[in-house]
Image 1 (cartoon, one colour):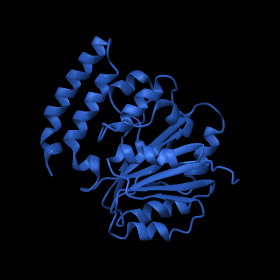
Image 2 (cartoon, rainbow, N blue to C red):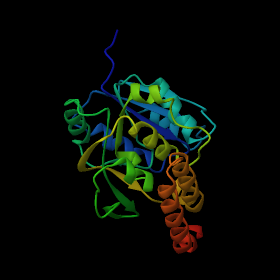
Image 3 (cartoon, rainbow, N blue to C red):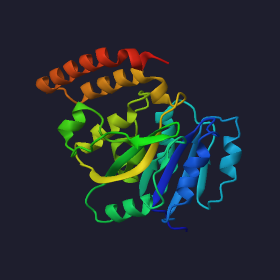
Image 4 (cartoon, rainbow, N blue to C red):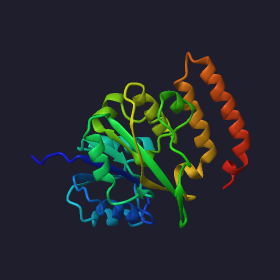
Length: 254
């Protein structure tokens, strides 16, 4: 029986032919090859599936016609994955350089934690810049104040996903934030202060196209984890309403 790969890279697709090649090329260029590709497609009809079929990688799984939202798709990818560590790299994002997987494997092999996250770059058209100007030290209290864990630069033991029940399929935008809050209560992450991925912002990306709904769902998720913490809840509520008033015009704009 073939030995399970170290990484499972789960990529959810739906008519992703425009951006998927750059995502896959960043994986094929890695200097660490002990990984599998797991594609979860919602029913593409733009050539995405033909492109996936032609990818020259021996360890490849394709799940077709998985509908019901991104949370369900990511859970399906985890269920199909065989690797020790899972990364969700969406079809419009890509790895920052060819040494990402080898670097993450090196750090996680030290056994300091069951999940890890690094920094991301943001790409808007041809412009690339750090997603945030700083990279604050992780604490659960800071996570309760806002999602500081960038999804495309996060690596989680597959067993940890399974133990926590996977992503909440009732959530459309903040499923990753909810997951980080769940697993960080018992397992604080390792921080890697390096750029690991590039997050592409464009009008078709789900969170960017639904910025106001995403902002509101983030806040509702935050409230789930602050029961019995009245001061934290009050602080979060005040921050939420202030930011909503400040950001609503631009977030509501197309």
